Amino acid sequence: MNRTEPERLDALRVALGDPAEADNPVGNAAALAVDERGEAFVAGERLLDAFGFPAEFVPAHLGGRLTRLDHMIHIARTVGRRDLALAFGYSGSTFIASTNVWTAGSPAQQRAVADLVLGGGRVAAGYHELAHGNDVARAELSARRAGDTLVLDGRKEVISNLARADLLVLYARTGTPLGPRSHSLLLVDLTAATGDTALRLLPRFRSAGMRSVQLGGIEFDGYRLPAGHVLGRFGDGVLTATRAFQVTRTALPAIACAGLDGALREAMSLATSRHLGRGVIADLPQVRRLLVDAFVDLLVCDAFTTVGARALHLLPQQTTIVSSAIKYLVPHLLLRAVRSLSTLLGSTFYVRNGRHGMFQKHLRDLAPAGFGHMAPKASLAMLVPQMQQLVRRGWSTPEPADPLLFRLSHDLPDLRYHQLAMSSNGRDALGGTLLAESDAILAAAAGDAELRRVIGAHLADFAALRRTVADLPAGRNGPLPASSYDLADRYSRLLAASACIGVWRGSDGRSFLGSPQWLTAALSRLTVQYRPGRDVDQRTASLWPELHSRHVAMRTFDLAEHAA
Image (cartoon, rainbow, N blue to C red; front, side, top):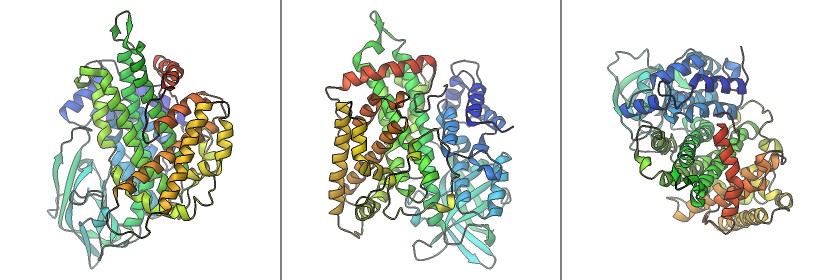
């Protein structure tokens, strides 16, 4: 039976049970015990197997359940709020690897990978090498032609689920000199390689966070792979990676929002139960401010990633910009929020078990989740040259996005992976909405002076940013100056602001998301030099009832407000 997204969400939530129950095999106590031992969460994985969780990553036309990326994110967050390491460790590598197959694979390759994943198999992705970090264009693992085979030499050190994978999507250097055609993606059947001495698995890496995720490496020494095992076209590795990363750079930070949701739940639980005098510590204004600020940061991150996920369906030729901005900004905001909440917990923050032991696990798991397959600063570097294109095109004659981008309950067309592009070619519908519809946006905020002020501040910053970018020298070689990263940071925040404003307008004032209070707080939090102003206490007071009611009713703290 094909269940709807709400039905799947409810079924998964029920299957996961009450996380606070001590005898729940997939509850908090079990998750903490597994984390302490650094083992795979076997009980959790068995539950997800029974649910058919991998089908969420396989497109519907191949027999899976992936029709909308935002729906897949909601399903994964249901797991991530309980245990982010389980959500990422169980199938994160399969999602990253298979996205490359949906992007560039032949029909036969897509069918084979879909059948493998739907049958319970795992796919790993081997991109990075420790010597080169995020600079995949310099990856040295090589595959040279030798007759009808490719001879592999080199190593990849940190690959999730490698030892448990059936198939490896491997990024290898297949040409010289370095350039856009110097690398290819290969499909290595690890089940067929058993016993081959030209291939060996390297010892597992230990980590501070995501301790139940199984990280390993692989080394090739003259390993022969049939030449037909190239994913897509020979030499298209950089193109495929650039396109596929737009999907994963958007979805993985979106899923990571579950870590802040879970941490905020722990902080609310402590703040509303720990007594101080005749009340609880949540009665203190400064405590409420911390909690509300984290709530607002979560709404910002969710608005940005949800709009980004919808853009992949609606604007696939422009998402290289928004996905890079998401990959940079969202992990930063998530970690900022959880670290702020840690000051509220005091010495309880260091506790690794017991009632609030999950808090420190959420924080430790969020840190590596923010890096994934590309560090945030590397994403910033990708924005600068595109900003220079935007000055000449998209920002000079801005065009707004289709309003459907911001109407979160409306259906979406299929995700057309083949239309994802390496560059937006100077187009930016998300930022263009803020520029082209500035008068309408200000008019919609006419009834709230503070909201108009913060919108006006972002519009002024966008104007200043455009002038500064226009003055940058074109065609610069070598490392980017620090000021360029600052400009990309400002641009990322403006894109997030545009997403928040779009979600606010798209709600038509019919729900909490249509209220000016959350948007005012969100835009204030997105300013580069955020300082609590005179109105912050008023905003805290206006948003606290929403946060508290969601906590009491066990509803999620994100945009969707599902049952937690």
